[in-house]
Length: 623
Image (cartoon, rainbow, N blue to C red):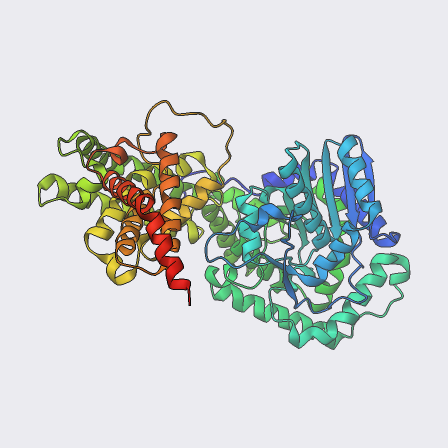
């Protein structure tokens, strides 16, 4: 029996739900209509409270790049139609999509007819479904991403679903991650037939088979435009079909053998749910590595001719799926599973037309099990982090206790300066140790997040956004104090530009991008922690500016220094007046209070001697 303790929640359950509704048949009917007679490149229709928009799958045959090699960034100018997808993490490459497919969508999007149809559907429909066959499926995905972005910006409650049939890959890993972060993955269902080579093509290098793509697309185009006339069209030669099949199968197999990192790190990456269908039923898989492996395993038992013809058989599969799910399933002799978990695996395999006796049954079963485990891993990691967070809370509590002691101390230096000028006491040592332990925990959080081991919306979950902000407010002043205590600013430069840890910049972005529902309020007392976590670094820079002011006599340099100093003085005063600082900032002997005293003295001296200074400057300027 498998060591998996929880029940196998078969993807067949999701497939059963979709197959039990009219969504698939209606979507396919409109896809056929768009392919056969759609001069605008799309058709729209409303059925009850559901609005359908189907895109033609034959738009790219003339004029577009048949090899699909050109990746371009999604538009990101002004109020971008895909604005939410451009919230990349630091160091992440931009969202890239197939240029030919993007051009098709942009041409349709600019059509007043499309805009009018969408306005009508949004006014009269509760749900909108985008669909498309072949290249039309990729256009439908872009349309769904556009509408989801639009609805998010306009706070609309329309539901959106995208159903594609035999669609090619659309974009890179950054696009996939962005869709997951926005929680849009469940809104995409990509129907892929057992042997169809089109959804598999863009996983592999296209240059060797690029010359064969145009005649292949032309053949598919003829058939999709008119199935009866398409029967008369001359397909590719057997040699050409075999060449395409072997090339795709070989490179897809190499990708699978290289492991998950090769799959997830490739140029293009699948997103959403993949609905693998056969004459025996269908299953859904949503893990990228498992999607690629299933594509390879299913294609491996096909043939060159079936890989071409299966792209045109979605109507047959859609027509049979509902009946297949109503049939009573049974196990062949010798296939009786030992547990309900194994039974779920076997039924899922049957849905793809794979018998347990076939050679690929073992790898296919492993693939489904891995997909189940991988799907749970981010949430499990998040749960484990929550446990670890509770265990490190005592370290944070000890630092908070230390701050309270410093703020009440008779020396009136406050939290920042007490730590900066600390001695060798056991208490000071413990606080410094806790500072390092908390940094280690949060660095590990960031590593897990950036390596896709946490939920993709982790950085938007209130619990973690608030926890990271609280950590930053409490501990960054100590990091600044240590930086200047050890003289790092002399060798590296000031803290903000040369010493600030990357985690704080990341937490700044998380906090900035959070959803804010409350209104701003006016504080009646000082904040428990200074809201500008770099405040003390700015104080240290301002102290250096005052020192530089005393040692220079160049008028232009003096003016520049005074401008910087005055800007900081205004910023600090605003924080104090609005009580956005902790009580330690205004402590009698804090670095800020001492700096403010020096600043006011120099300012008064400048006012006193300003007439003499201007006279001296004017005399120097007279030839």
